[in-house]
Length: 167
Length: 337
Image 1: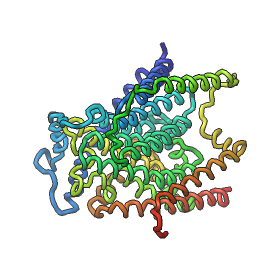
Image 2: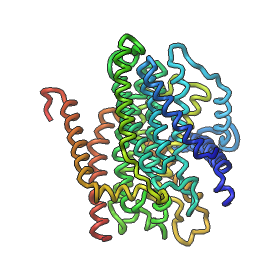
Image 3: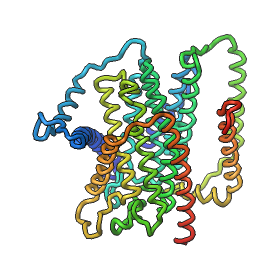
């Protein structure tokens, strides 16, 4: 087995195993910290697929941003960090049905999507092409996304300010 | 050399061992420097007993640290407590993979080099939070929360300052950024007023923000000894504490290396005539200049309060960095065409 396949397998295993741990651990914070490895595994898979820029974005956004915020949210909420999650429980039927539905949807998406194959070699670098794409073909979605983020930021600031507090 | 580079089973472990050695030696040197420089600044002698000028003191301390018991208190979250130092150390370790040592020589010349460094640093924040929470100790938790809040906030001006350089160089590869600054110190980004004067402002913002990223005075709130005992690593001892310690000094050096690569030419010599001095010497010389500067600042400035910390970040550095980014971009468009 060459090193590339081995690494791909390792990253895949890491992603799946830690994701299972997120779902099944009764400790909320352990689930949060386990997400670290899931995100890292996905980033590793991106690297193996030749998408270096996307992998760095994955780490920066998901680990540096979302995960940190999530953990902060848990730690700053009273009684949340030590909360025991009920795993298993009584609503097994509903859970199973919902899970199956999601699985079906994902499989449908996977098989419906036409995966275009390219005969060209993998590009050495991806960042400059992504940048050019954002500034030309995908300019409108890019700008809409930035306006959405700006709106979210202003909304968060508005919520964070206590009622009746001036400027 | 080609045989080595082509064989990742050989090349990978060798690079890893070299980086680990650099990090260890760096900690020994930096701790010694920190003690000596601070002693001289306060008109003391510093360590003098072991070896001439006490140069073996940190080596002895390191041996002592290895021999210490690994104490794990009752009531802590064992798996997280044990894992945290490795995550923090691993992230600090991984940053060194893209260090450009000389023209065309770096362990890994990634196309997304700078971006990789910024991304990997976010692991440190999660590791610190893990350590602080799992210790089940209020000082640890406060230290961790402060540390992470600070790291996340100061990442913004830091990234914006870095972005100015990336924009001027037209590449995120650390090698390309170095090559761009060739031909003498007046072409270094941090000093080149004729190339893009706004990079000088970015340099200042980068340096201040990097001090906060590596938890140095005046931004050392996460481990403020007088308030929090030791911050997020209060409960750690022995080798696990040593890993935090190594990571901290590795981060100082990494911040220095990145500052010298982005703003002081990296492996570029001071003058073109000084070409015969090898690149790594220039790079580490500049990086240690920043390490000494960090120590100097620690001995000079008092610690900020939490509200002042956030004020400096969001109301001074972020608008400043944004202004530098916009003006630098305009300059790039208008003057350089």
